[in-house]
Length: 126
Image (cartoon, rainbow, N blue to C red):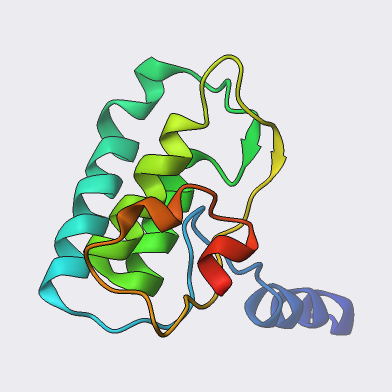
């Protein structure tokens, strides 16, 4: 085998592109509620999402937002963030970049879901 062919084979083995999914890949606690919530969102992505169409004006899409919100903040808090995000996604809603907040305020309690209505603002972070 020539020297050039051997280098091509070595390059193919070492430099393969790493494929990442469209959902959040970061670390999270794998509790049953989070896994169930993320599983339901992933089931929607694999089945019904194709029929709804690719017309989302927000980045990340609502299902990607929900997946990450549930993974980071749990089913209760992440579920409310996703519900308010989905409500804002109507024809007269906003558009652009709307990421999931990395942290939530420490003093928030479980019975105040209305505080998650605007996921990208200070009402969540403090």
